[in-house]
Amino acid sequence: MIVSLHGTLLSKEAVFAVIDVNGVGYGVHITLSTFEALPDVGGEVTLLTHLHVREDAMQLFGFRHAAERRMFRQLQGISGIGARMALNILSGVAPEELRRRVTTGDIAALTRIPGIGRKTAERIVVELRDSFAREGGTEESAGGAASGARDEALMALQALGYPGNAAEKALAAVQRMGENTDFPASELIKKALQQLNSR
Image 1 (cartoon, one colour):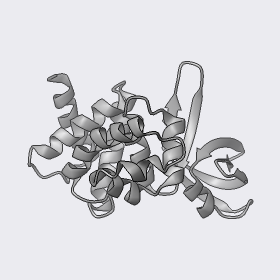
Image 2 (cartoon, one colour):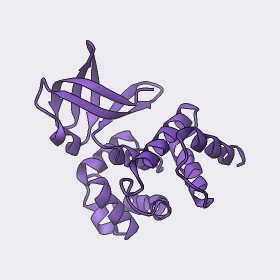
Image 3 (cartoon, helix red, strand yellow):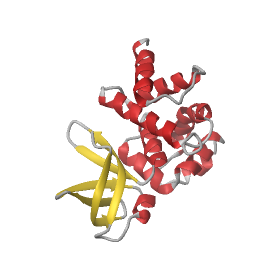
Image 4 (cartoon, one colour):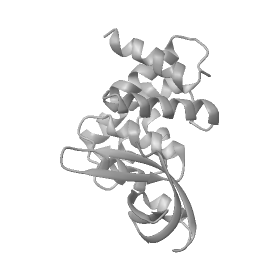
């Protein structure tokens, strides 16, 4: 699984960039905020990535920050929202603002994002509001090490074949147990697997 890229920026467009890593050019779909943070062509760049695998294609998505990548994965877990729509949503609103709109149930503000109708906005609120409430704040406030371990655990569970939404719910269930959640990724994976296999 490709989880990050570090190399030379060969080209960039509003939603797509090509990064040379030791002579191999990787095409990466990006958000507008990531595009704005990229260096000039020829500069050195590091992106966190998410590899989206379908029956007919493999697509690589890149993000400047872990919070944006995590939100991308959470959005993909919602019925009817694919990778391209999740990218579109995050191009229209920052993760922190999206979290605010969801937790306050601001449907009108969500529908102002291009391509998001009322039904989709309502689905986003229903699917994510409880999850955000359990997390209790932004990813950054939760601590870099803890969020990094959670991200690693989520990727591992998806690599094992569990859908992103199911993996997210299992990790959230571990948090709801009221135990210390500053576990290393390996322990989070173990506890999440117990949740998944008990269903």
